[in-house]
Amino acid sequence: MRLPRPVPAVSSGGEERERGMQELRLGIDVASVEQHRAALADESGRLLWSNRRFRTISGQLEALWAAVRAAGDGPVTVVMEPTRNAWVPLAAWLRARGATVRMVPPEQSADLRRYYNKHAKTDRLDCELLARLPLLHPEGLVATPGLGPAEGLRRAVAHRAGLVARRTAGLQRLEALLELLGPGWSTAVGIGVLGKAALAVLERYADPHALRRLGRGRLTRLLIRASRGMWREENADELLAAAAETLRLWPEGAIDFAELAEDIAVEARLVGQLGEEIDVLEDRIATLYADADPVGILTSVPGVGPTLAPTILGRLGDANRFRDLAAVRNYTGLVPKVEQSGLNDKRPGLTKAGDRLLRQSLFLAADHARKIDPTLAARYQRLRAAGKHHNSALCTLAAVLVTRIAACWRTDQPYQLHDLDGQPITEAQGRTISATLSPVMGTDRRSKESHSAPSTGPSSTKAKSDRKSA
Image (cartoon, rainbow, N blue to C red; front, side, top):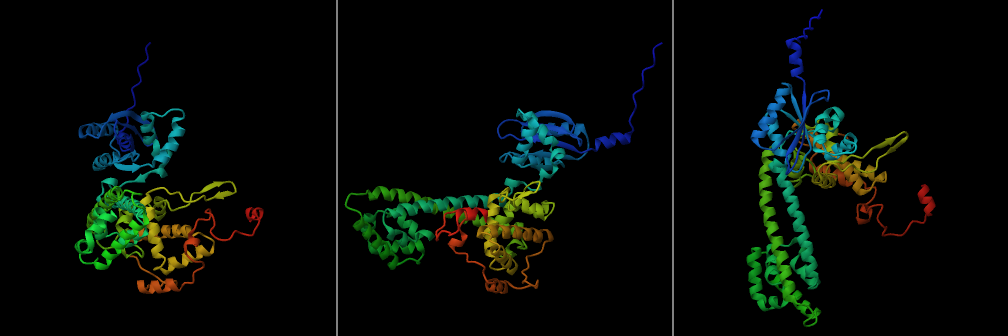
Protein backbone atom coordinates (compact mmCIF):
# COMPACT_ATOMS: atom_id res chain seq x y z
CA MET A 1 0.00 0.00 0.00
CA ARG A 2 1.31 3.40 -0.97
CA LEU A 3 1.95 5.62 1.99
CA PRO A 4 0.51 9.13 1.83
CA ARG A 5 2.96 11.87 0.91
CA PRO A 6 3.94 13.97 3.89
CA VAL A 7 2.43 17.41 3.88
CA PRO A 8 5.19 20.06 3.96
CA ALA A 9 5.19 22.12 7.10
CA VAL A 10 3.86 25.60 6.62
CA SER A 11 5.87 28.18 8.46
CA SER A 12 4.03 30.81 10.39
CA GLY A 13 3.81 34.32 9.11
CA GLY A 14 5.94 35.49 12.02
CA GLU A 15 8.81 33.21 10.98
CA GLU A 16 8.58 34.43 7.40
CA ARG A 17 8.67 38.03 8.58
CA GLU A 18 11.65 37.22 10.80
CA ARG A 19 13.55 35.75 7.84
CA GLY A 20 12.54 38.70 5.70
CA MET A 21 13.87 41.20 8.29
CA GLN A 22 17.31 39.64 8.48
CA GLU A 23 20.15 41.97 7.58
CA LEU A 24 21.42 41.60 4.03
CA ARG A 25 25.07 42.23 3.11
CA LEU A 26 25.72 43.42 -0.42
CA GLY A 27 29.37 43.20 -1.46
CA ILE A 28 30.33 45.22 -4.54
CA ASP A 29 33.65 44.92 -6.32
CA VAL A 30 33.79 48.43 -7.81
CA ALA A 31 35.48 48.84 -11.19
CA SER A 32 36.62 52.04 -12.83
CA VAL A 33 36.15 50.94 -16.46
CA GLU A 34 34.67 47.45 -16.50
CA GLN A 35 31.36 46.35 -14.99
CA HIS A 36 30.96 46.18 -11.22
CA ARG A 37 30.39 42.76 -9.63
CA ALA A 38 27.96 42.22 -6.75
CA ALA A 39 27.19 39.38 -4.34
CA LEU A 40 24.48 39.18 -1.66
CA ALA A 41 24.80 37.29 1.63
CA ASP A 42 22.63 36.97 4.73
CA GLU A 43 23.66 37.53 8.35
CA SER A 44 25.21 34.05 8.59
CA GLY A 45 27.41 34.65 5.54
CA ARG A 46 25.40 32.31 3.28
CA LEU A 47 25.45 33.57 -0.29
CA LEU A 48 22.01 34.27 -1.74
CA TRP A 49 23.34 35.14 -5.19
CA SER A 50 26.67 36.13 -6.64
CA ASN A 51 28.53 37.60 -9.61
CA ARG A 52 25.79 40.00 -10.70
CA ARG A 53 27.27 42.48 -13.16
CA PHE A 54 26.12 46.07 -13.56
CA ARG A 55 27.28 49.60 -14.26
CA THR A 56 26.58 52.87 -12.49
CA ILE A 57 23.51 53.54 -14.62
CA SER A 58 20.15 54.30 -13.04
CA GLY A 59 18.31 51.52 -14.86
CA GLN A 60 20.86 48.85 -13.93
CA LEU A 61 21.02 50.12 -10.35
CA GLU A 62 17.22 49.82 -10.08
CA ALA A 63 17.45 46.21 -11.29
CA LEU A 64 20.20 45.50 -8.73
CA TRP A 65 18.13 46.98 -5.91
CA ALA A 66 15.08 44.97 -7.00
CA ALA A 67 17.18 41.79 -6.80
CA VAL A 68 18.30 42.74 -3.30
CA ARG A 69 14.76 43.43 -2.15
CA ALA A 70 13.55 40.18 -3.66
CA ALA A 71 15.83 38.38 -1.19
CA GLY A 72 14.36 40.09 1.87
CA ASP A 73 12.97 43.24 3.43
CA GLY A 74 15.60 43.62 6.13
CA PRO A 75 18.20 46.37 6.42
CA VAL A 76 20.92 46.36 3.77
CA THR A 77 24.62 46.93 4.45
CA VAL A 78 26.72 47.62 1.39
CA VAL A 79 30.46 46.85 1.57
CA MET A 80 32.87 48.15 -1.05
CA GLU A 81 36.43 49.36 -1.53
CA PRO A 82 37.16 53.04 -2.33
CA THR A 83 38.20 52.45 -5.94
CA ARG A 84 39.30 55.88 -7.21
CA ASN A 85 36.17 58.05 -7.33
CA ALA A 86 33.96 55.42 -8.98
CA TRP A 87 32.49 54.43 -5.62
CA VAL A 88 31.12 57.91 -4.79
CA PRO A 89 28.01 58.11 -7.04
CA LEU A 90 27.34 54.44 -6.37
CA ALA A 91 27.41 54.97 -2.61
CA ALA A 92 25.22 58.07 -2.86
CA TRP A 93 22.58 56.21 -4.90
CA LEU A 94 22.48 53.23 -2.52
CA ARG A 95 22.43 55.46 0.56
CA ALA A 96 19.42 57.29 -0.88
CA ARG A 97 17.59 53.92 -1.01
CA GLY A 98 18.15 53.41 2.72
CA ALA A 99 21.24 51.22 2.58
CA THR A 100 24.11 51.62 5.02
CA VAL A 101 27.38 51.96 3.12
CA ARG A 102 30.60 50.68 4.67
CA MET A 103 34.07 51.04 3.20
CA VAL A 104 36.92 48.61 3.76
CA PRO A 105 40.56 49.76 3.45
CA PRO A 106 42.10 48.13 0.36
CA GLU A 107 45.08 46.77 2.30
CA GLN A 108 42.79 44.92 4.74
CA SER A 109 40.63 43.40 2.02
CA ALA A 110 43.78 42.39 0.12
CA ASP A 111 45.06 40.46 3.15
CA LEU A 112 41.73 38.69 3.60
CA ARG A 113 41.48 38.04 -0.14
CA ARG A 114 44.84 36.25 -0.12
CA TYR A 115 43.57 33.94 2.62
CA TYR A 116 40.11 33.45 1.15
CA ASN A 117 41.03 33.08 -2.52
CA LYS A 118 44.10 30.99 -1.73
CA HIS A 119 45.45 30.50 -5.23
CA ALA A 120 43.20 32.60 -7.44
CA LYS A 121 41.91 36.14 -7.73
CA THR A 122 38.68 36.69 -9.62
CA ASP A 123 36.09 39.45 -9.58
CA ARG A 124 33.46 36.91 -8.51
CA LEU A 125 35.46 35.91 -5.44
CA ASP A 126 36.17 39.56 -4.66
CA CYS A 127 32.50 40.52 -4.46
CA GLU A 128 31.74 37.38 -2.40
CA LEU A 129 34.51 38.28 0.03
CA LEU A 130 33.11 41.79 0.45
CA ALA A 131 29.61 40.41 1.07
CA ARG A 132 30.95 38.17 3.85
CA LEU A 133 33.35 40.75 5.28
CA PRO A 134 30.94 41.99 8.04
CA LEU A 135 31.08 38.45 9.39
CA LEU A 136 34.80 37.85 8.85
CA HIS A 137 36.23 41.21 9.87
CA PRO A 138 33.56 43.61 11.19
CA GLU A 139 36.07 45.97 12.83
CA GLY A 140 37.64 46.64 9.43
CA LEU A 141 34.54 48.43 8.10
CA VAL A 142 34.46 52.22 8.06
CA ALA A 143 31.25 54.25 8.04
CA THR A 144 30.83 56.72 5.18
CA PRO A 145 28.10 59.26 6.04
CA GLY A 146 29.55 61.80 3.61
CA LEU A 147 30.30 61.77 -0.08
CA GLY A 148 34.10 61.64 0.13
CA PRO A 149 35.66 63.23 -2.98
CA ALA A 150 32.23 64.61 -3.93
CA GLU A 151 32.34 66.96 -0.92
CA GLY A 152 33.44 70.41 -1.98
CA LEU A 153 35.61 71.33 1.02
CA ARG A 154 37.44 67.98 1.06
CA ARG A 155 38.21 68.27 -2.64
CA ALA A 156 39.13 71.97 -2.53
CA VAL A 157 41.72 71.69 0.26
CA ALA A 158 43.38 68.76 -1.51
CA HIS A 159 43.44 70.79 -4.74
CA ARG A 160 45.04 73.72 -2.94
CA ALA A 161 47.70 71.47 -1.41
CA GLY A 162 48.53 70.14 -4.87
CA LEU A 163 48.81 73.64 -6.36
CA VAL A 164 51.00 74.81 -3.49
CA ALA A 165 53.31 71.83 -4.01
CA ARG A 166 53.55 72.60 -7.73
CA ARG A 167 54.25 76.28 -7.05
CA THR A 168 56.96 75.35 -4.54
CA ALA A 169 58.57 73.06 -7.12
CA GLY A 170 58.42 75.89 -9.67
CA LEU A 171 60.09 78.29 -7.26
CA GLN A 172 62.87 75.77 -6.69
CA ARG A 173 63.45 75.40 -10.42
CA LEU A 174 63.40 79.18 -10.80
CA GLU A 175 65.95 79.59 -8.03
CA ALA A 176 68.20 76.99 -9.66
CA LEU A 177 68.07 78.88 -12.98
CA LEU A 178 68.82 82.20 -11.30
CA GLU A 179 71.92 80.66 -9.73
CA LEU A 180 73.37 80.54 -13.25
CA LEU A 181 73.13 84.33 -13.41
CA GLY A 182 74.85 84.79 -10.05
CA PRO A 183 73.83 85.18 -6.40
CA GLY A 184 72.80 88.80 -6.77
CA TRP A 185 69.64 87.93 -8.71
CA SER A 186 68.07 85.79 -5.97
CA THR A 187 68.67 88.59 -3.46
CA ALA A 188 67.31 91.26 -5.78
CA VAL A 189 64.05 89.49 -6.64
CA GLY A 190 63.48 87.95 -3.18
CA ILE A 191 63.19 84.36 -4.39
CA GLY A 192 61.44 83.12 -1.24
CA VAL A 193 58.61 85.66 -1.51
CA LEU A 194 58.37 86.35 -5.23
CA GLY A 195 55.84 89.11 -5.82
CA LYS A 196 54.21 90.35 -8.99
CA ALA A 197 56.98 92.89 -9.61
CA ALA A 198 59.75 90.28 -9.47
CA LEU A 199 57.78 87.88 -11.68
CA ALA A 200 57.16 90.66 -14.21
CA VAL A 201 60.90 91.35 -14.45
CA LEU A 202 61.85 87.67 -14.72
CA GLU A 203 59.20 87.00 -17.33
CA ARG A 204 60.41 89.77 -19.66
CA TYR A 205 63.93 90.88 -18.69
CA ALA A 206 65.87 87.92 -17.26
CA ASP A 207 68.50 88.56 -19.95
CA PRO A 208 71.01 90.95 -18.30
CA HIS A 209 71.62 92.66 -21.66
CA ALA A 210 67.88 93.33 -22.09
CA LEU A 211 67.58 94.57 -18.51
CA ARG A 212 70.39 97.08 -18.95
CA ARG A 213 68.91 98.29 -22.23
CA LEU A 214 65.60 98.88 -20.45
CA GLY A 215 67.28 101.46 -18.24
CA ARG A 216 66.68 102.70 -14.73
CA GLY A 217 63.72 104.96 -15.50
CA ARG A 218 61.59 102.46 -17.41
CA LEU A 219 62.51 99.63 -15.03
CA THR A 220 61.41 101.78 -12.08
CA ARG A 221 58.06 102.55 -13.71
CA LEU A 222 57.55 98.83 -14.42
CA LEU A 223 58.26 97.94 -10.79
CA ILE A 224 55.92 100.65 -9.47
CA ARG A 225 53.05 99.46 -11.66
CA ALA A 226 53.53 95.76 -10.92
CA SER A 227 53.99 96.21 -7.18
CA ARG A 228 51.49 99.07 -6.74
CA GLY A 229 54.19 101.36 -5.44
CA MET A 230 55.93 98.91 -3.10
CA TRP A 231 59.06 98.58 -5.30
CA ARG A 232 60.83 101.74 -6.47
CA GLU A 233 64.23 103.15 -7.47
CA GLU A 234 66.28 101.24 -4.92
CA ASN A 235 64.91 97.91 -6.19
CA ALA A 236 65.64 98.91 -9.77
CA ASP A 237 69.22 99.79 -8.79
CA GLU A 238 69.65 96.40 -7.12
CA LEU A 239 68.42 94.56 -10.22
CA LEU A 240 70.69 96.57 -12.51
CA ALA A 241 73.64 95.90 -10.22
CA ALA A 242 72.90 92.15 -10.37
CA ALA A 243 72.78 92.31 -14.18
CA ALA A 244 76.10 94.15 -14.33
CA GLU A 245 77.72 91.62 -12.01
CA THR A 246 76.44 88.77 -14.23
CA LEU A 247 78.09 90.29 -17.29
CA ARG A 248 81.37 90.68 -15.38
CA LEU A 249 81.12 87.13 -14.07
CA TRP A 250 80.59 85.38 -17.41
CA PRO A 251 83.15 85.67 -20.24
CA GLU A 252 81.80 87.07 -23.50
CA GLY A 253 79.90 84.37 -25.44
CA ALA A 254 80.32 81.69 -22.77
CA ILE A 255 76.55 81.41 -22.19
CA ASP A 256 73.48 82.21 -24.25
CA PHE A 257 71.63 84.63 -21.97
CA ALA A 258 68.66 84.85 -24.36
CA GLU A 259 68.02 81.10 -24.17
CA LEU A 260 68.40 81.10 -20.40
CA ALA A 261 65.97 84.02 -20.16
CA GLU A 262 63.37 82.01 -22.11
CA ASP A 263 63.55 79.16 -19.59
CA ILE A 264 63.30 81.60 -16.68
CA ALA A 265 60.29 83.28 -18.31
CA VAL A 266 58.44 79.95 -18.59
CA GLU A 267 58.93 79.18 -14.90
CA ALA A 268 58.00 82.74 -13.89
CA ARG A 269 54.74 82.55 -15.85
CA LEU A 270 53.85 79.18 -14.32
CA VAL A 271 54.60 80.39 -10.78
CA GLY A 272 52.50 83.50 -11.34
CA GLN A 273 49.54 81.55 -12.76
CA LEU A 274 49.66 79.03 -9.93
CA GLY A 275 49.71 81.85 -7.41
CA GLU A 276 46.58 83.38 -8.95
CA GLU A 277 44.78 80.02 -8.93
CA ILE A 278 45.72 79.50 -5.28
CA ASP A 279 44.29 82.92 -4.36
CA VAL A 280 41.00 82.13 -6.10
CA LEU A 281 40.84 78.70 -4.49
CA GLU A 282 41.50 80.10 -1.01
CA ASP A 283 38.52 82.46 -1.36
CA ARG A 284 36.34 79.49 -2.29
CA ILE A 285 37.70 77.42 0.61
CA ALA A 286 36.95 80.24 3.05
CA THR A 287 33.31 80.28 1.91
CA LEU A 288 32.97 76.49 2.15
CA TYR A 289 34.55 76.43 5.59
CA ALA A 290 32.26 79.19 6.88
CA ASP A 291 29.27 77.07 5.85
CA ALA A 292 30.70 73.87 7.38
CA ASP A 293 31.84 75.41 10.68
CA PRO A 294 29.81 78.58 11.28
CA VAL A 295 30.66 78.63 14.99
CA GLY A 296 34.40 78.41 14.30
CA ILE A 297 35.15 75.38 16.45
CA LEU A 298 38.28 74.48 14.46
CA THR A 299 39.68 78.02 14.47
CA SER A 300 39.29 78.13 18.27
CA VAL A 301 41.92 75.37 18.55
CA PRO A 302 45.41 76.74 19.32
CA GLY A 303 47.74 76.45 16.38
CA VAL A 304 44.88 76.02 13.89
CA GLY A 305 44.46 79.11 11.75
CA PRO A 306 42.41 79.98 8.65
CA THR A 307 44.57 77.72 6.46
CA LEU A 308 44.83 74.60 8.62
CA ALA A 309 41.24 74.68 9.92
CA PRO A 310 39.56 74.02 6.54
CA THR A 311 42.18 71.39 5.71
CA ILE A 312 41.67 69.47 8.95
CA LEU A 313 37.88 69.68 8.76
CA GLY A 314 37.79 68.83 5.06
CA ARG A 315 40.05 65.78 5.33
CA LEU A 316 38.76 64.53 8.71
CA GLY A 317 35.08 65.06 7.93
CA ASP A 318 32.32 64.90 10.51
CA ALA A 319 33.85 63.58 13.73
CA ASN A 320 30.45 62.21 14.77
CA ARG A 321 30.83 59.41 12.23
CA PHE A 322 33.48 57.67 14.36
CA ARG A 323 32.36 55.27 17.06
CA ASP A 324 34.73 56.83 19.62
CA LEU A 325 37.75 59.12 19.93
CA ALA A 326 40.16 56.20 19.59
CA ALA A 327 38.73 55.58 16.13
CA VAL A 328 39.50 59.19 15.25
CA ARG A 329 43.15 58.71 16.21
CA ASN A 330 43.32 55.46 14.25
CA TYR A 331 41.93 57.21 11.18
CA THR A 332 44.75 59.75 11.20
CA GLY A 333 47.48 57.08 11.25
CA LEU A 334 49.17 58.86 14.18
CA VAL A 335 49.03 55.77 16.39
CA PRO A 336 51.86 53.24 16.78
CA LYS A 337 51.86 49.84 15.18
CA VAL A 338 51.62 46.97 17.65
CA GLU A 339 53.38 43.64 17.15
CA GLN A 340 52.79 41.32 20.10
CA SER A 341 53.86 37.70 20.39
CA GLY A 342 54.34 36.02 23.72
CA LEU A 343 56.57 38.25 25.81
CA ASN A 344 57.49 40.46 22.85
CA ASP A 345 55.71 43.76 22.48
CA LYS A 346 57.12 45.87 19.64
CA ARG A 347 55.86 49.21 18.41
CA PRO A 348 57.80 49.83 15.17
CA GLY A 349 56.64 53.34 14.35
CA LEU A 350 53.31 54.85 13.29
CA THR A 351 50.75 53.08 11.14
CA LYS A 352 50.55 56.11 8.78
CA ALA A 353 47.18 54.84 7.59
CA GLY A 354 44.55 57.25 6.38
CA ASP A 355 44.92 60.70 4.92
CA ARG A 356 48.48 62.02 4.45
CA LEU A 357 47.35 65.66 4.09
CA LEU A 358 45.45 65.40 7.38
CA ARG A 359 48.56 64.09 9.17
CA GLN A 360 50.70 66.89 7.75
CA SER A 361 48.19 69.53 8.87
CA LEU A 362 47.92 68.08 12.37
CA PHE A 363 51.71 67.90 12.65
CA LEU A 364 52.02 71.61 11.75
CA ALA A 365 49.17 72.53 14.08
CA ALA A 366 50.77 70.63 16.97
CA ASP A 367 54.05 72.51 16.49
CA HIS A 368 52.20 75.82 16.84
CA ALA A 369 49.84 74.63 19.57
CA ARG A 370 52.64 73.63 21.96
CA LYS A 371 53.65 77.30 22.08
CA ILE A 372 50.14 78.37 23.12
CA ASP A 373 48.64 75.54 25.19
CA PRO A 374 50.57 74.97 28.46
CA THR A 375 49.31 71.38 28.77
CA LEU A 376 50.72 70.51 25.35
CA ALA A 377 53.92 72.42 26.08
CA ALA A 378 54.42 70.45 29.32
CA ARG A 379 53.76 67.16 27.55
CA TYR A 380 56.22 68.05 24.81
CA GLN A 381 58.94 68.75 27.39
CA ARG A 382 58.25 65.45 29.18
CA LEU A 383 58.57 63.55 25.91
CA ARG A 384 61.82 65.33 25.07
CA ALA A 385 63.16 64.63 28.55
CA ALA A 386 62.38 60.94 28.00
CA GLY A 387 64.62 61.00 24.93
CA LYS A 388 61.96 61.36 22.25
CA HIS A 389 62.95 63.02 18.99
CA HIS A 390 61.38 66.38 18.18
CA ASN A 391 59.30 64.89 15.34
CA SER A 392 58.23 61.92 17.47
CA ALA A 393 57.07 64.24 20.23
CA LEU A 394 55.10 66.35 17.74
CA CYS A 395 53.39 63.23 16.37
CA THR A 396 52.23 62.40 19.89
CA LEU A 397 50.95 65.95 20.35
CA ALA A 398 49.19 65.77 16.98
CA ALA A 399 47.30 62.65 18.12
CA VAL A 400 46.32 64.41 21.34
CA LEU A 401 45.27 67.51 19.42
CA VAL A 402 43.02 65.67 16.96
CA THR A 403 41.38 63.88 19.89
CA ARG A 404 40.57 67.23 21.48
CA ILE A 405 39.36 68.62 18.15
CA ALA A 406 36.99 65.68 17.71
CA ALA A 407 35.74 66.03 21.29
CA CYS A 408 35.00 69.72 20.74
CA TRP A 409 33.22 68.94 17.46
CA ARG A 410 31.11 66.16 18.98
CA THR A 411 30.04 68.37 21.89
CA ASP A 412 29.67 71.51 19.71
CA GLN A 413 31.93 73.45 22.09
CA PRO A 414 34.95 75.66 21.29
CA TYR A 415 38.43 74.75 22.51
CA GLN A 416 39.21 76.08 25.98
CA LEU A 417 42.80 76.70 27.09
CA HIS A 418 43.76 75.64 30.64
CA ASP A 419 46.85 76.13 32.72
CA LEU A 420 48.69 73.25 34.40
CA ASP A 421 46.26 73.44 37.33
CA GLY A 422 43.23 73.10 35.08
CA GLN A 423 42.10 76.72 35.32
CA PRO A 424 40.78 78.46 32.18
CA ILE A 425 43.18 81.02 30.68
CA THR A 426 43.39 83.32 27.68
CA GLU A 427 45.64 82.80 24.67
CA ALA A 428 48.01 85.53 25.82
CA GLN A 429 48.34 83.87 29.21
CA GLY A 430 48.86 80.51 27.52
CA ARG A 431 51.72 81.87 25.44
CA THR A 432 53.35 83.33 28.53
CA ILE A 433 53.07 80.12 30.54
CA SER A 434 54.28 77.97 27.63
CA ALA A 435 57.30 80.23 27.13
CA THR A 436 58.26 80.06 30.81
CA LEU A 437 58.34 76.26 30.84
CA SER A 438 62.03 75.46 30.93
CA PRO A 439 63.02 73.56 27.79
CA VAL A 440 64.68 70.21 28.38
CA MET A 441 66.63 70.49 25.15
CA GLY A 442 66.65 72.94 22.30
CA THR A 443 64.67 72.64 19.10
CA ASP A 444 67.41 73.89 16.85
CA ARG A 445 68.30 72.14 13.60
CA ARG A 446 70.65 69.62 15.18
CA SER A 447 68.19 68.56 17.89
CA LYS A 448 65.55 67.91 15.20
CA GLU A 449 67.79 65.64 13.14
CA SER A 450 66.85 62.01 12.82
CA HIS A 451 68.79 59.67 15.08
CA SER A 452 69.57 57.56 12.02
CA ALA A 453 71.12 60.50 10.14
CA PRO A 454 74.89 61.06 10.17
CA SER A 455 75.91 63.22 13.10
CA THR A 456 77.22 66.72 12.42
CA GLY A 457 78.98 66.90 15.76
CA PRO A 458 81.79 64.96 17.41
CA SER A 459 81.43 61.21 17.41
CA SER A 460 80.67 59.31 20.59
CA THR A 461 83.62 58.04 22.61
CA LYS A 462 81.70 54.93 23.63
CA ALA A 463 82.83 51.73 21.94
CA LYS A 464 80.61 50.25 19.27
CA SER A 465 80.03 47.07 21.24
CA ASP A 466 79.09 49.14 24.29
CA ARG A 467 76.61 51.18 22.23
CA LYS A 468 74.94 47.98 21.02
CA SER A 469 74.59 46.63 24.51
CA ALA A 470 73.37 49.92 25.91
